Image (cartoon, rainbow, N blue to C red; front, top):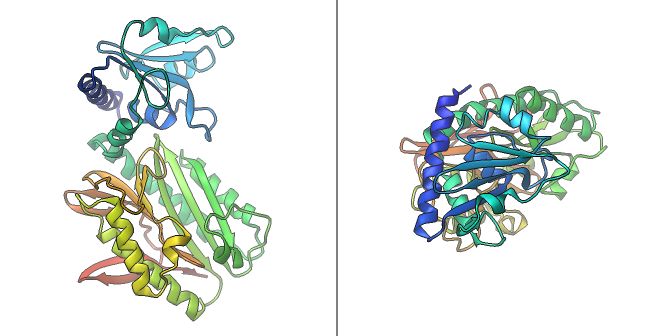
Length: 368
């Protein structure tokens, strides 16, 4: 657990970045309502109630001299006492839940205002997305710790899958393992048998698992979202399925090793397209997205044709190549030292691959 001093220093640095961005545009105040942006700004405070909502019941107002967190009488006690937002550098302003007026108008009166979305002033959503995508050292420290927890949750859940268990039961175990580690499972997908071949985003059903299962998790903790996928097969994996899994793993390996500073996400799309073609599955590029950068959303920017967004150091990525019936996914971090696979699992079977002379291990299908 990081100290308040570490997190307060992170908040202070982020406020400085925001004020510089405002000044460069001739603006004086910024309203932030998006859950992802609030998590980034507050060094991981959970300001949301509904985990599916993109906006928060709290909002921040940043001016040249002050940083306010505006909320109501329902949320203020938790944000003040447990989250300790005042110690992080915010002035907490609360109003009775049924009599909220627009305090923002009063506090920002006369200032040239911007928002992190569409509104009355300039839209700085793209700038905030850019800022939150490159992680500070304290964020990377949290990311590494939380990625280990996400991997542990998946490892426990995938090894608990049983023949005759329903997909809902497997999803419940995966969600429980995430919650037990302090994370929020914002995406839990489970498919078994033919459903893995038919659907790329398989919400769990009552179907009973017969031979083969796929578990997918997006694990949010301290605002950061870590993604990973694993597969389990009861009995020997059929040769055709094994061949597909190895092809998918090679596509994933090429994406991971191709994640380099300065390369654009459009170029990463082209890399994936060529990799699928080389493996004999050219249609796969059109059947599902390949992932992209990640941070306070499961994907900050998805790799699409001609996307000019450049890759930078200290960014997280989650590539998720898939071929009908198989998928390969881990969260990774790009630093000056190279690629770090954040969600690697000790004791889980892997495929030992080499791409242009570079060795890399990718998850295999777990045989039980």
